Every structure is written in C-alpha cells, then in structure tokens.
Length: 489
Image (tube, rainbow, N blue to C red; front, side, top):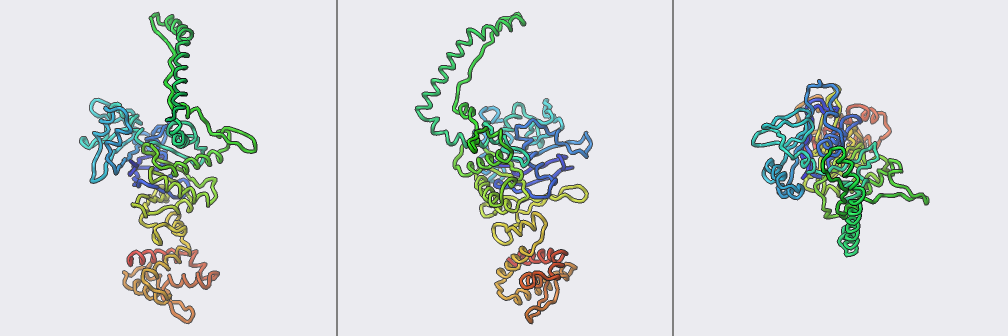
C-alpha cells in the first residue's frame, strides 16, 4: 500500500488546491528554497504522523480565516487490500468499516482519506476539525465513521528525517522507528531461544510477586486515601503488565564511544545523530523480508552533512529500500537525483516545484522527460530539468544521441538531418533562430546545434561560445535536440 495522490488546499505556502501524483517507489521532489518541498512531507505527516501539530497549524497566512484548509490522500494497493487491512487492524469491526470504503479499479484498490479544518456532518455524527475522514463511494462524500480515526492513521507508518533536525524520532526506541525495526530483526532469533523464554518467565513471575507485595503496602494505603475523599469502597492497586520481547528492546539505547569517551547518542550533535539515522535506514534497505506494515519514509535533504560519494551511496540504498517501502526525498542534490531510474516497472516519480512571479507554485511531473540519454538521468540532464540550468555537457549528450538515432557518424551528415527537420517544421522565431551558417575545417554547417557542438569541441574559450551560453541560444538548441530525438526515436 502506498500514497498515489495528494491534494492540498490552502496548506502552508500553497494557496488554493494543488494536486500531486506519486509512484510506489522513490518520489523525488526538487526545486529551489522555500518552494514547498518540505510542505509536501508535512502534509503526509499531518495525516499519518504522531506529532501534536494539527491541520490548523498549517493554514496559509494569506487566506481568510473562514476558508478551508484540507489534505486529501489516496492510498493504493496492487495486492488484495482487504487482507492487508486485516493484517494491520486487529479490531475486526473497525477493519470491516474500513474495508467497506475500498474502491476497486481494474487490478488496484484505493482508499481516499481527508483531513480538514471544517466540521463534516455524516448522518447524525459531526466530525471534529483534524479528524481523518474516509471517502464513501456510495454517498459520494467523505464521512466521519465512528471509531476509525486512530486506526486510519495506523494504515501507514511514517518515518521522517528532517534536514534541520536531529531526526531523533528514528533513533528513539519507539515501535515504528528505524532503530527499533533493525533491532527487532537482529534480536528475533534470541527471543525464540529457550534461554530467553526461561528468563522472561522468571521476570514475569517475580513481577507477580512484587505486585502481591505492593498490594499489602502501597495499594492498601492508596485505597484508604482515595476512599476518604469519595466515601465509597474503591480499590486502588498497582498492576504490572506482562513483559514481552519489545519491552526489553525499548530499554536499550544507542551509545557512541570515541577516544575512550562513552556517551548516549542524544548527547551528540545533529551531524552524528543524522549519520546514525541514515546508517540505520541503509541497513533496513539491506534486510529482506522485514515484517513491517506499509511504511513511508519522508527524507528532507539527505545530502546534508554528506560528501558527494556518500550522497550517491545513500541514494542507491534508498532505491533498494523502495523495493519494499515508499520513499519521498526532498533534495537539491544532483547526486541524489542521479539514482532515479525507470528501468523497473516505472515505479519512481520526479516532481519539480517552481515559485512563479505571482506567488503561485508550479508543479511539474518530469518523470517521462528526464531519461533522454539512458534509462537513468545524467547529471547534466538533472541540471537542466530539475534546476533549469542548460549546460554544454547536456547539449553534447543530446547531439551524440541524435547521431546514434540517425546512425550518422559525420558532423556534416547530422547537420544535414537537422536542416531537413527544421525545414519540415512550421516556421517560427524559435525554428528560424536554429538556421545559422558557419564554416569549420573548410566545411559549411547550417544549424545552431552543430555550431555549438563545434565551438565546444574546437574553440571552447571563444567569445562566440560564451555569448551562446550566456544567452538563449544554448537553451533553444537543447530544446530543439530534445524535440528532434523524441520524434525520431
């Protein structure tokens, strides 16, 4: 089960409704600072996370207080969703209520959820702002079903690592943390051993003895003091829960020993905490068949504190992790995006965000645009599509690709192909600007792409090439080569 669609309305910097489509693998979010990459992670966490923040805390500051703020999320599954829900939700009646809202489309199953600042009336029941609503296909509306707000939040486990925080939620000994997941994996065989079974029985037997002891001392005194206030016969007592394997694990901690100085990880800086967190996630990626419920990893700028080689290594590990769990990465780094590939079932997505002059946010899914050279984007290609930076390197890659497609080896031959293509296109300022006659090695060339290629290869430091790079010519030529290659492939 994974998040396939997100619709946010008046959420943080996003005024009005904005829709995002995602894939079940790695979802890369790119764009300049303050464009809203982290806000997408915030929206997902607002629905499924354990933080105290409510949707009202994320209201766009430019809207009227009476306007609605909302988040809609579509969960999709390629496997039989009713069975998956039964495995996640222990309560049978609650599980049935959720399954009654499943939508079935061809070979996929969907559940639509919504969180809003509005109070929704369904039947005789009114929802509170911030409660998770579920879409009813029968009623064609989102409704508040009794008892399923908390269970709906448990359908997906959120694991988040922020760029500007220590990411301590992932290294704490909470059940859903990366640390606890890895620790449980490596401890599982021990908890099945006779040694542990005997130890656990002894611990629980002794706790029972302690409970009886407290019943005769502390519990009796508490009962007497409570009854003095209520003048009733009320029994107040202490009871110990049965110790399970997870209780032992939660009593652990990660420590750092450096130069004979031994400290708790939380006493170290953000850089060390983040390094350990990322290492745990990389280890999770290497472990197969983890008994985890569907999880979504929200990772904000994983490149922070990492050398480029470390960034590439981490990116590859996150791709491995995405084979089992969905991953969202908000990043500025071409070394992270370099791991993007469409080779396996088209499971990854690439979204670029750009702030327009009117303050609106432009959302572009460039998943189908970013693999023009090979099945994985080149760094130069990433610079162009994700960061809007045209480079001679990308131009050269596209030029060589054009030669491969047309099976031409000489520069004169490919230049002729370009000329023929330009003459067949409807005339425009853009097309006419590509017709530039130049001369190299006693040969005449007639197109801008060929001129740029020759200058880059033979006269790299020329003023003519500098003017091309600084102006619009390089971008125009790249756009032409992209169109040329796509049409001929």
